[in-house]
Length: 441
Image (tube, rainbow, N blue to C red; front, side):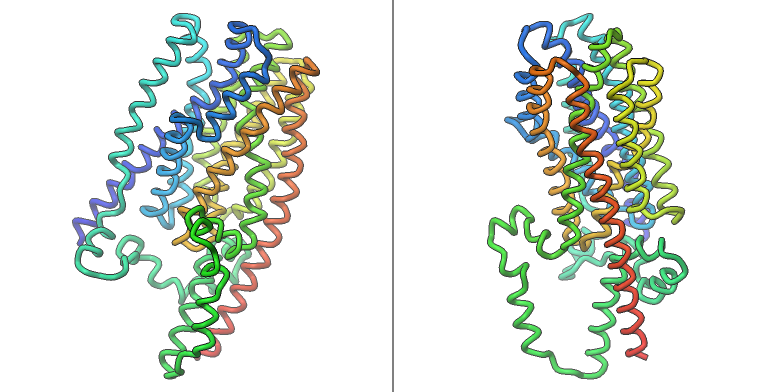
């Protein structure tokens, strides 16, 4: 078993590296749309709305490209929590630096490739980067310890072998949580599981017979009433976890920023007379700052310096202000500064949404929640044709960015509501836990 644990220890960092490369390519190719948009507008002589439909189709999982990139991205995000527990935020942020690195490298690289090989040759070279995802797919497999436990005939996976610190969870979680609200929020899911576990232990020790009405109520729970399609698509999560509905609305509002801004930042810069290579450098600034903040935020979260929901709300507000300045300025220097703040906030927010999902749903439902997260992010691509049509009608590159500002303001309000409701839920769970402990003693 010690050898298997050691194998898990080294393998989990390989998982992080593969997740890093997956995000490097998927996000790098995504932000390069702005560079290709400027090239396509000149090459084909069509309006922006025409090419916006192409980008929307690809983002929603069109044909082969969209589906493949979405599955690859989700695999990397969903596999990390299976190997990491206490250092999950740091590992998730470390893998997320790949997105920042891709945003920093790909836009100027695509500009250089287009100048040398044309947009046809550039797409062929990007295909070579995509082929490396096959190697990452080979690495994505569950922990050796969990696999061995199943092979020995156990009906359940002994997650304590993978995460030994979870064993004493019930004895310490609310003691730590009572000291500061931050600890409550980070450990909210563990408290909920502890309450259920303490209740079960009490019934077993007292010899209380199982109430048939409780069993019947479980059979008729909202989850069991869901249809097969609802279970398959994961829609039952919206019934089981009410706060997840507000969370998804916040994700949708913010994803309009992440999915469309890389296009219109470049178009806006070229529209005011900035050279293409300098316009692409703006996305490099976003990527460089995003890579830095993705790595550092995990370190702060794991040490309890700030609540993930509080940090998420603050950074969304920063994104709204930075994007608003970016919309109206005509100075390249101010655009660079705005992109710096936009990158810092975006680098924190994107991995934080995955981390917040972990606090809102049970671990068994986390992969489904992350799948809905990615699907919601892709659904934001429907705004690209709308922005393209607005640009064609008004012939002003500021209006598509103004639409993003509106959704960022809405997202800030939704995130603030989510932060407040989450704190109330955590305090209620901790109070319930304390009550069960007193009844047990």
